[in-house]
Length: 101
Image (cartoon, rainbow, N blue to C red; front, side, top):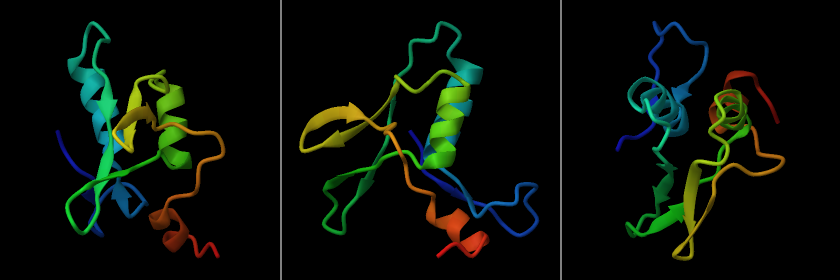
């Protein structure tokens, strides 16, 4: 259980935040010796109901690198679906950092 983590100015990464998917993959890599953990990602709407959260392009690349692409899920209308999708969007933090339009 966790959440996305904002990076400060003195952080060694040149990005705005570390996404929940990255934190979960790092946790699983160091603590899941039998490769049995699944990762569930979601966001909350303002009324505190669950909203789907799909992996951005960077998180998809990390999931594919460590072979977690089939183990990251999100909720869509009370159904569990894969959070790794084809043609993912660039994250908002990366767009802001590099002035994407």
